[in-house]
Length: 495
Picture 1: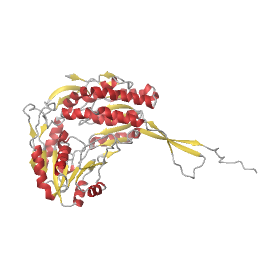
Picture 2: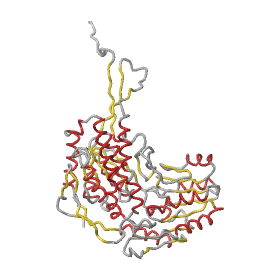
Picture 3: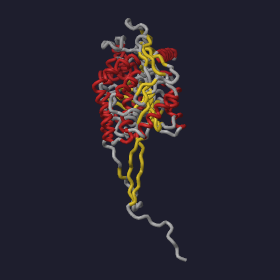
Picture 4: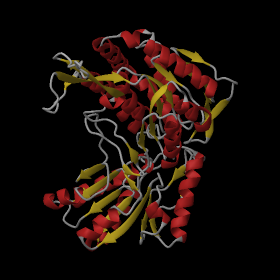
């Protein structure tokens, strides 16, 4: 049984008040660890430590190259010791070990990429209006200071890397509040940070509940920017708290992503992409392709192929390489997914595959749900409109391109979308009409440090990753230089 502590100023600290949060292994239903239940006192200590590291410590006085060298030292540690982090995340959120290993083996690349990106950021001369004579202007980029980082439970450590790698490269310090449902891998990661050359106080971790730790972090007067990934409900809370302090926020929220499948598509490729998009990670992905919009002429064939593929998937121990279906991350989420499946049935959708909890022989008390497919879904159904965040696919027919686009955009979200067709002209035409931050063509679910990710509508605002990720964690300062004497605005007048 593990009892974790908060990580503040390079050391481990018991939470103020001594309260803890149980972490239940979703594959077994057993408690395996306890997280600190931090509160506003713990948050204040962490933020103040981060602020001092930024204003008075080595970090704030380092050159860009010195800071980059520190980040690269962390990358070196991660490259050689990432495997030490796998068990904690699998036991925390139930994701298959094979998926976690694939993510963690590349963690170091995120830090290397943005460290190198920082080396290319310089002050920029500005193109001024010709009427402005005798002056020049330069844009300088400087860090915000303390960044509040709030991460979700589905891929906590990978998403953390997306956020803090560019934030650190930009020269900021960070206070991280991981999800109370999955804090272990982040706390284990903090230990590796302590073994790198990044100075104490630059990276801090406070575990706790949203109201008790997350809100105080966003509202602390020394927090200068916040980045959040989670539900749209949580995003609203973060946005309100950030607005009260007039601080910027980047929000990457929920999704109800459509997959548009045309009759001319490469069927095998499309089926692989669609199954990956919704059933890999149990649909517990922000970009999960949960709405399949399929051309009427191939509807029955597509549904049949999907059922054939997923009905034989094996559920079991997420550490077993043969396991294809892992548990959902926690019991509360299991109940939510089962409730939405029941609602879909009651509203008239036809469950053609799965649709129930399952009990693997070796993990009978785990939080497992069968991969589920619904047909005869209509746009007024809850299953079409609300994010399930589980292994549940809603299938609907379309007759022409205009209807497909209309159905795709018939959502309050706009995080991702997939288009499956051999007609490149059509694909590019549809891309311009789809209301989503990421659109995949004949492919799905990739992410890369060089490509921005973020949403339209209720899926949030701001972008993470991409060519401007480091600058997103910096403020712009205009510096004007006089190149000619100032004229007297009030010349003396002789009387």
